[in-house]
Length: 279
Image (cartoon, helix red, strand yellow):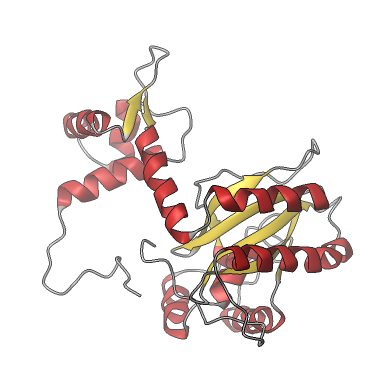
């Protein structure tokens, strides 16, 4: 599968496109938008250049101006349409949401769907728990390192060996949680276990108060394209309860995989996945 981050030999990248990409990536994680000066500082470009780029993006519907008179810039609805097209191409669009809602109702915890984006988990969909105290995340965000989340470890476990080597060589195993795996050797052993048993658990690895369980989602070609996870506060989701929820999570992952056209040939596993080409 083609990795678009690897440019073809001899091809010069377009700087204007890189600048536009930087602006959109800077706006995406800020629901309240940003002002011109903030964006200029974020992307390291003069305000006049950023203003011209934003004017074009507004004309294309990729950026909008806030209607409250603050002059702030917001990510535009056209980006949602484009993102939805990707989800639909992968088969994990609106049709999968029903499965997530069912799992959330069954477990009482937050359910999320994530794919690999570089060395981070990109959250594609979520259904939040009805509890006041719950695990929460932002759809569209990609700030959780893969090595310390249930989704992320599941996705890393199904990468090709060469892609996994490249990611581990390029990234530091930081420790945001008390139980984060920071040894590459230990992480590789954990990924082997995850691949063999078909589920992963985040036991206070991303945060000191969150646990999660994840199962793999296969597409019709037998590649793991995403992972579904149940996450909750450690005070309610003990390690024993997390393990007890494994069959429900794995079964739901299997049902979603079947919906995507995956056919289990009897070995219980699909083909080792590669990252989505946009990642």
